[in-house]
Amino acid sequence: MQKILVTGGAGFIGSNFCNINKNDYEITALDNLFLGDRRNLDDDIRFIEGDACKTEDLDKVGPVDFVLHLAGTSSAPMFMGDGLVKGYVNSIESFLTTLEWARKNGVKKFLYASTSSLYGNNPIPLIETQEVTPINHYAVTKRVYEYSAKCYNKVHPDMDIIGFRFMSIYGPNEEAKGEFANLVSQFCWDMARGLAPVIYGDGTQFRDFTNVKDVVQGITLAVRTEKQLGAEVFNIGTGRSTSLNEVVAALEKAFDNGVKAKYIENPVKEGYVAGQHADIGKIQAVLGFEPTVKIEDGIRDQVENVRLDRIRKTSSDELR
Ligand SMILES: NC(=O)c1ccc[n+]([C@@H]2O[C@H](COP(=O)([O-])OP(=O)(O)OC[C@H]3O[C@@H](n4cnc5c(N)ncnc54)[C@H](O)[C@@H]3O)[C@@H](O)[C@H]2O)c1
Image (cartoon, rainbow, N blue to C red):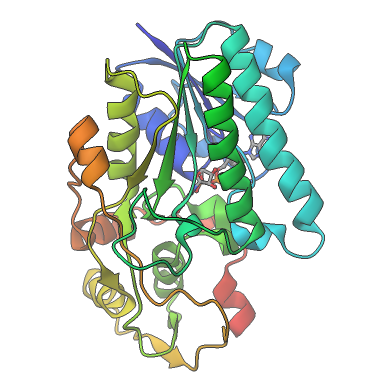
């Protein structure tokens, strides 16, 4: 069986990848538990508590065929205030250390998380060929990943280095991200606690809310393909827009507990992204990707599996 190392494997996307793929690959999840939770991983998955910035921790993994690098500073607010330097160092150091480790250990393919935040307020649909100008430090780190992947692949063309610009991802196992979690999760946790989810503005703003199962599908297709992909970057999304009003309607239907959303004036005066959705033509054409989870189904599944005991502080707590 082929072997995969997943850095950040106890986190939201990482744990879903490991749990879904555990019967098809021999998986090792490595995580320093900065945000992840060991309980996100099924018990039979090999777990190493370790730091992706440290070669000696990566060496504990042993030989692998593929690396999926998801460790890092995983959202823009983490770079605010005192988080700035640590945020950069953790993201860039973990990426480059893991990349070097992978090449020196004969890894066939290195896959990593970029972000759709790179697109900022670009015209939609967002497509990989657009010019991007990162509007926050988080997006800058992901742009650095993409540029360094290209440089690295020129010098070391034997190892593909494939990036994914994830859209707005929701699904199970996000509790440990707390205040940094996706809006769908935050709204879901609010409603589970009988609290009104807070919407900025009139709720017509929209995102390409993508279920984590579809993200796992996209990454797995890239692992499996025999095509040489060099240092390509792919959008992963649904290619559809979902407004916050639609999200709340699906949550209200799933909970059926009488809790309604509260609408407030948008406090974000500059740089607020009014709407985003992806063009997914590239990943469809090259890898055969097709999103499968409808928003109503994904939200119903999340509501059925909500685990309030694992939640850290949420952003809605600050608004009350
Ligand atoms: N969730 C989204 O909507 C989304 C969207 C775009 C991009 N991404 C990117 O995808 C990746 C995974 O995101 P996520 O939502 O699962 O976030 P997450 O925070 O749940 O997962 C990241 C994991 O990495 C671990 N980690 C951090 N630094 C580490 C280090 N130095 N060594 C080992 N482990 C470390 C954390 O403990 C955490 O478990 C991140 O790079 C994120 O920036 C996520």
